[in-house]
Image (cartoon, rainbow, N blue to C red; front, side):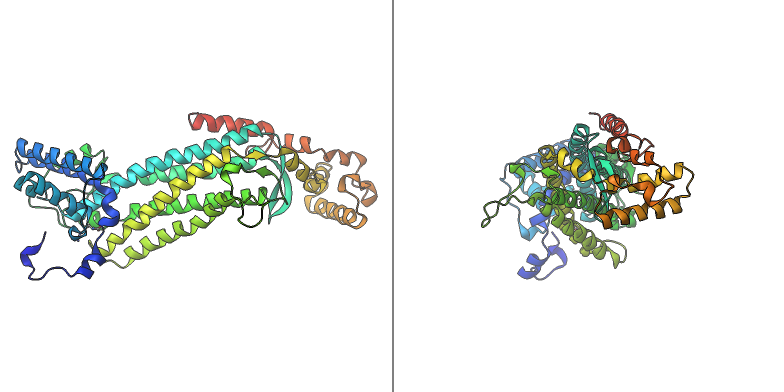
Length: 452
Ligand code: ARG
């Protein structure tokens, strides 16, 4: 493609080192779509005749079909997806194909292709995230009132409901959805027409190209447009945070499915056995999910590092943006899909959850609240309940069986009425609190939000 000024062939090792076709072939649909829009604008600018345009359009569509059918041979000598397609077009339709690259560079081409790719994948990831939210929502709806311990420091803290716990993840994933939508909106401008870095002396109608490609507008500085990879950094960050949320969910499920907790059983279809210990049933999906978070973070850091030292405008380092991008998109899509399926098929053992939540110690704070309602300042109430807890431990008497007035006369015999788990949950009705009524209302709100 650039033999004009070179006296030597590119060395084999350089070709091997610099090719990107082995991974950027995945951009072929976007590349072809961009080329057709670009060619159409060339007709309007008088560079191509309508017949030449038809030849280019049909030629590109035929190439697309061949790629889809696995009948297109990509060549590493032609470096990347852009050169592979352009050179096949010229081979197929003759010299007209050689007109396509007028007023265009691979620099604005690749920036356009990757924006189109990201836009499409954000839409796919959005659907998968909503599926996961629905899986969580279905489980929350089944168990709006089932008590379960809420933990801080992985120590039992206060009782909550199973539904409330699961809805916490629905909240996290909804923030992820809004971040994705935000990134999508920001990336949806068309760089085509920026050329190598300084536009072109041949002015194509950029607005029309942008419209054809479904962009909301055009980029407004050719140098920035060529070198901007912010949208990739944003997307890779968004995917990293989704990964972090999935990893936290995994950790809960790994704990919950252990014999020690026994709060859930994962289906046989979503667990694996041991090659040595016949009784084992392992939560591999959750573990792999937790493990894959590392590569999502790594991909983000790889991209940020590639970008950070670059002077304006395009530098070949930017080619290193694609493998992390593709890997993170592939990883998150599969991770979301398998987790949705696993959560749908999971059984919650509400009896075990309730047994764990029935430890009266979990209502120690409610007991302090009772004293507060009797007029005792909270710090003093905390101290008095602390004494009762110490007495309970020392005498090996459950907190709800203790003679509380004997610990301190501030406790009246009615104080014992605090130890009613169902009631303790029922009264937590403030917005955001875990009462069954709240959980039911939140499930309905999320259903409406997710259009379910
Ligand atoms: N394969 C290249 C990339 O991914 C396309 C742009 C090449 N531009 C250039 N000036 N060599 O970045």
